[in-house]
Amino acid sequence: MPKNAKSVVWPAYIDAHRTRKEGRILAKQDSVGAPDVKEIIHAANELGLNPTYEDEKAYPRLWWGHKGRLRIDAKGPKRSAIRRIARAIKATRAQAILEDK
Image (cartoon, rainbow, N blue to C red; front, side, top):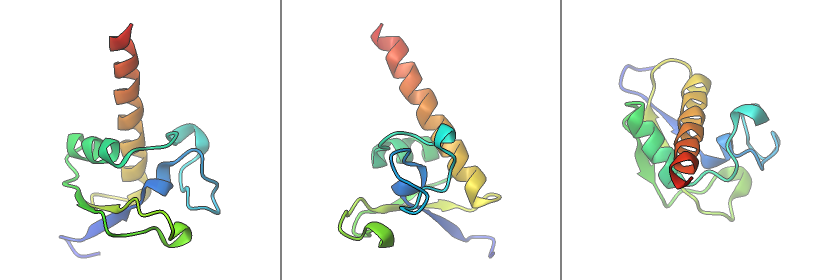
C-alpha cells in the first residue's frame, strides 16, 4: 500500500446491530451499538488518523441508507485501526454516562 494511502471506514464495520453478512467486521463485544458518524470522526481525530468524511457515499451492501464513509490514514492493519476507533467511542460513551451521574 502506498505511504499516503487512505483506508475506507464505513459505519457498518463497527455497528453491533449489524451481522457479519451486513458488513460488520469486528466481533460483537468489540463493536458499538448504532455508531454515529460524528462519533467515528471524533474518535478518529483523537487517535490521529486524520479522517475525511464523504457524505454522498452509500455502503454497497446497504445502498439505500446514505450514511457516508470515512477515509483514514493507513497506519498498520485496517482492522486494528477500526478496533481502536470502536474502543475510543466506547470510552467516550462511558465518560458521558459518568458525567451524567
